[in-house]
Amino acid sequence: LFSGIWIFGSVWIRGHWLADDFPPLVYYFLPVSLIFSSVFFLVSGYFSALKNYQSNAWINIIQSVATVALFALFGKIWGIYGACFGLLLGQIPAVLWGFRAFKKFFSVRLSLRWPKKQENGMWNFALLALYSAIATQLNQLLIRTHLTDQFSEVQAGYWEALQRISNLWVPVVSVLFTSLFLPRLTQRKLRSEFMKDTFLTVVAAGGLVFLFSVTVFGIKEWLMEWLFSKEFTSAKDMMGLHLMGDVLKAMTWSFAYALLSRKKSIALLIIDLL
Image (cartoon, rainbow, N blue to C red; front, side, top):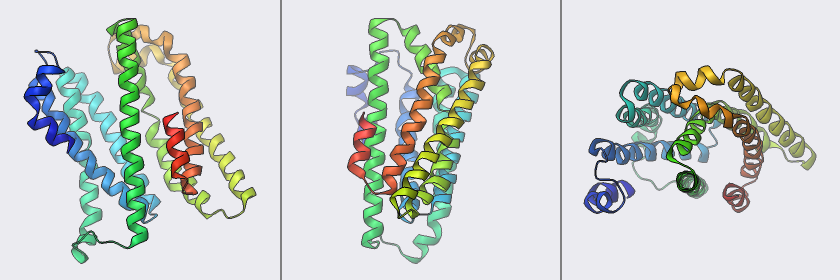
């Protein structure tokens, strides 16, 4: 729906929201990327509803690694055009994996009339994913706008660069959450066992991201120049606090997955909002 509005409403959107020199090719990369991403979320929701955590972990890591790698690679070669094209191509591996996963299912059943329990799982995941996607992007948009208005576009660019670096640890932690921690938490019936595993999840996720943060901080000057350019080396002065925030974010995600294992959707939405 959003892609259709973006494509067919291009005249109005480009006239009211975007600069006159906004690249037309980049404009149409976005809706195509969203269409591919929607297939990824559909397949991920399907695996979650079936409690197939291993497949869900693989599709998440494939999509995350492909997006980050192709974004960096093509962005380094062709600038903004390459970066946006890399984001588009990064969704394709997940689409191919999704087709492979759905092929057997739809060869047996061609309708979407699934069992009630499975259907509820799909809807719950879809609503959570949609809410998280909107809230995350809106939050980042507000931050970038504030930094641009109060400081400069350069400062906003530094913050965006740090966000890209932070995304590097997401695939690893996502795999641990979906393939190891979430199944364990779901199986725990006693409160003492559940609290123990929740604590271990917080420590493990926070510890891994802490090691990642220490490594990134140690090579920050080389990393900023290699991933971006020499103009971004000044962003290293803000990296320490940003990486500390990453550790806290990973620990917060641990509590979120604990709530997800107990089907506490409302509480999970509130945590995501905060």
